[in-house]
Image 1 (tube, helix red, strand yellow):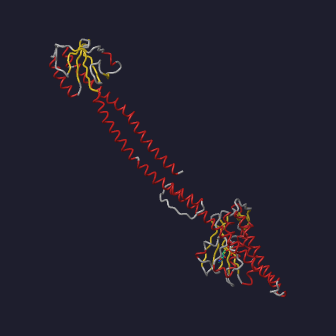
Image 2 (tube, rainbow, N blue to C red; image 1 turned 120 degrees about the vertical axis):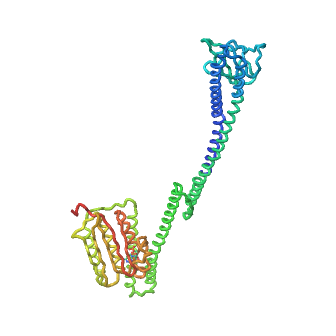
Image 3 (cartoon, rainbow, N blue to C red; image 1 turned 120 degrees about the horizontal axis):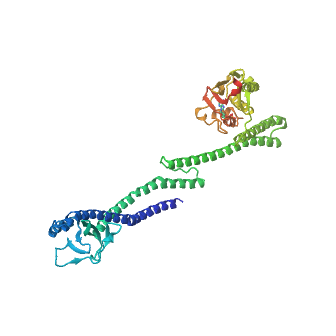
Length: 473
Ligand code: ADP
């Protein structure tokens, strides 16, 4: 594709050159010639009229002699580079500037016809066969007493007009050449600005299509090309990230399924072959049951996450009191908190605080956050849940004073299967899916969730929900 694009551009460039040359050789050339001819004829005609009105009419009125007129016209003819004739209406040549006066031999313009220039003030050709080369001739009548007494005719060789025309044309050719060479800059620009980046982009696309999503390329320009290249490499890195995530996801799922299954299998085999005596069966069946519970929890979390990820997830939004949901969720954890002497303190704004959201999903969010807060709290500590309202939003914060999250992990905890090293020893049952489910739910509501945490001091998770304006007045 790109090869032909470049060839097309060069072809257009050559066509442009040839076309320019043809235009100069035909139109420009004929227009220049025509212009020069008219221009010369115009100035000669003015001279002829001037002569006809001055010395030539003086000659016919016998105010001056033929010799005197010839002397004047000789000088003028050298100056004009032209031949000046005075002829009678019959065609008899009274005087010419190129020959001495000869009254003995009468010269005639055979077939002279004063209407030859009809419609114009000049004529080209050999002027009634008087010349062997092509001439430009103008003539002006010499009038006296309302009668045409003769004509002043000025001839100049067409070859001299052609010569000056050609020298003008050669300037046009030089200009055309310069212009053609200068337009090479456009070709160079095109190559540098469009063709080279386009080649890089095409090569990159081919590499991406072949599966090499980590192929790197550089287009430095800050125009559309640079933007296209940047978007393309961003797209590739997003796809690569997606693929990596998927691989990691599958590896994590397999790993999380395999370990409980391996231990279930191990215990059951040991029971079957008698390694575990029947009196201990109950104890180990309890462990097996625990492991199956974990598998069920994992499967449920995966299904929830998958449902949430599906496009067009339908939220059943209703107006409900978030304070009420906080109270009931906190109450459901009482049994877990009591043995560890963990207090849940509620600091709720208003008696009721209505929000518009999917109630059951928000219950799940609160459940996940509180579950984590308790899991990662020290015994004898407090967890504080706060609700507040600001600018049409309700902010819900769950704050613990537990182990905290290392800074480098804070961005990753919302990723699927992510668990910090700190939590691994403490929380063997965690799946690492709770927070990613939580974030998906909040995002589906077009809201945000953030975490503020200090390692060793505790963590605070804050999320927002839209307030139900109709209920607050
Ligand atoms: P899990 O099921 O493992 O709790 P989550 O997605 O809910 O999965 O949490 C991911 C990880 O984030 C946890 O394993 C833990 O390392 C960290 N984390 C979440 N909440 C807290 C918290 N309140 N205090 C400390 N670490 C936390």
